[in-house]
Image (cartoon, rainbow, N blue to C red; front, side, top):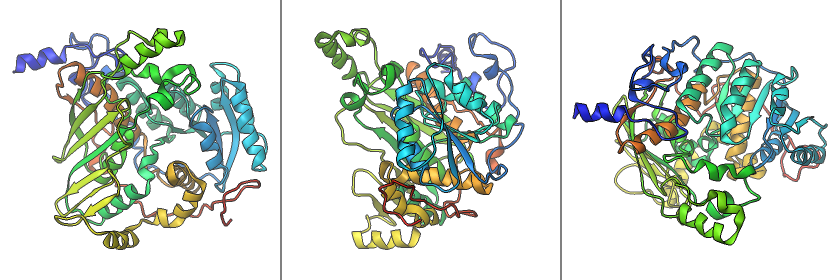
Length: 487
């Protein structure tokens, strides 16, 4: 058995993940020199990491105005600009996309709201560096294809900017460690924009868990089950340069953070508990390959995408924590199934489950009836939802959770508060992808999960959804906005 395991650990990872072994990701005690088992792992991963500054609980100096720049104005960027236009203390200072017409479309949004034009950066692959170098910017909000997330975040932090980056924050183990090292050294926040942590039921169950209503948390489940093929992935006019389709040649859990983030917050991962190891399994691909073969026969545009090996339809990843809890995360974006993030929390006194609808809670052996659910919600809705929940629903963004996320980020920066999601969360939730790729490629062998906190998880304080301070940032109704809000 030991010999077989050593052989597994010597097997190279799949393309795109880098060469990964259990030795190469072991937290804060990685080998200082190359070994036969990891000949191509970068010096950054081989080197021993020592935490230079603990970013968990770090409160950066408060900002009277949060001068914000947006990079990437395709799928996600314009909506983020509109949401931030409603938040007091946000100054939209710069807009960037390599396509100039996208920048101008978002300038029109600012004009509609009666806001001044922002600085424009466009026309080249390197235009974003000008945004990060601009001394009049405090926060860089990144909504680009995944391959740019870490390079842009690192460059921005090195330039003295706080960073908010769409999911996933990184694609490789090396990139995850790079985010951690630079954030600690520069003392600049790097928040992964995991909006699902701010959805209403997730915040309700987090608050209930904090109050002990589920007892000791035993198990959690999350997922991203969302058939994206025909509406997004194969759409010529969807993601620029078909980048989202190209990502699907990687075989693992490519998008773990939506289901994982809320479960990690309930379990106090990085703040009292940590992930120890994972194992991952993927089915074969029964959909994308055949779909693209058919599309290529009908349209030459798809010929370069035919004949490739794509990720399996369903990936299931299992994680064990230091305190003995388990987490199951699933990913399927190519099967005709109803949308689900699962969000199941199971404890010694009860459980909660969001999908399939309706969302349910059990404080015993049976699901609570609807009237009791209403009582639970009234008693345990956290302060952050009471403060901005109804306005968030009016403004929108996945039912309001996007706006709650943006408002909370802004309020923390304006009041000098620690962020709810720090760089260790960004790195940990993102690293599941390359580790799951390695496990899938090695017959579901288990692999250690890095401790990006370098042991600080034992003392880091959990996130409190009841606003320990601040909460004074108003929601505005910009001139021209159709949202029915009180200023």
